Length: 243
Length: 234
Image (cartoon, rainbow over all chains, first blue to last red; front, side):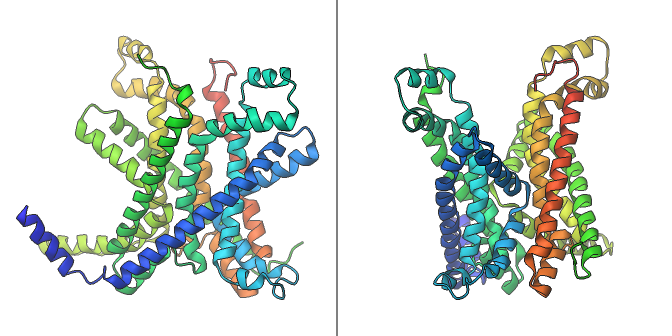
């Protein structure tokens, strides 16, 4: 034990990289990453619910554009979507004179927009699959009760679809957390950006990147833990009965 | 025809780099995936533990971070290794990490973990009776693997391999960040020089869509082949 403490203090004492200064970089990176991922997931899910309902519409004019949107955004790399929004945002007529320009001038908001559009496309397909798998009997029962379509959607289809979508959505959250690392490419100081800065400054790739990998690993495990708890609660009725 | 301002040939070269990179990484990933699946199904606890550690670590860390770690750290690591070789055995070699090979190795290493999970599930769904029959015929382990286990396993693994391939294809875009000249990098350079993001990024995006659509078709053909004798269920 004592040997361990001396080893530990020596390691910390001889370390010139992880000073308060660089740790602050990592901390700011962590908050940026979490903000970016949380906000894009939140807006993405709000967009995805109506899109998923529209994706199953009878009218091709509603269904097809949504399908085209999800096909394009799921079929191309997020990096390209990010570049397109980041470099393309100035091409919107008059945006530089509008009140939104101070917002879009910073890299954070174009990145948020690209991430949101990307996760909304994946989430739409996840929800659509869950809605499609609603048990026929539940819909028949709702109809027999004389429920209107919106009421049936709100009370029967969506609540059970959300539950069924939970495991796939958990994967999407982790995917988004990992994909957000590309934000560092457009000058955003997220976790990966901070790690790159530390690497470049001290020329210490192992320390810089392994440290950040461990942070991402902790984040991933936390997300997995939360979703596992949620699944256990919300999908309790689907588990095989014990005893 | 659209005017690519002289970047056309370089974009094409970049597209070829993307394609080569994706296919070679897929091969590495499949081989690593098969090894990982065998490790995770092994009764040896150490081997099993290594397999589990590998898949857990790789799947918990962003691709880009792993890529940076292996690419920027790889050269230093190899230098340290060759230095030690020199000190210990007086062998003087210098290995230069090539960006393309580093890309292939990194993407292969990342997707080997995902493929490992896919193959593990697929191996487990091959009935034991099939292998017993193979052994009863006197097949050696390798022959039984090649003729019985592998083709039967592929039927279950194919949808997963297809998904992994689609994700892998999109992941190749990240190599542009660590300095490989794939089509994304050419498009990004052209965008910075000409301030025409749509002119260069949209064709690149369409190329990805084209490859994805073509591979979907190939995978559906393959699925038909490996489903032979099982009806048209999948």
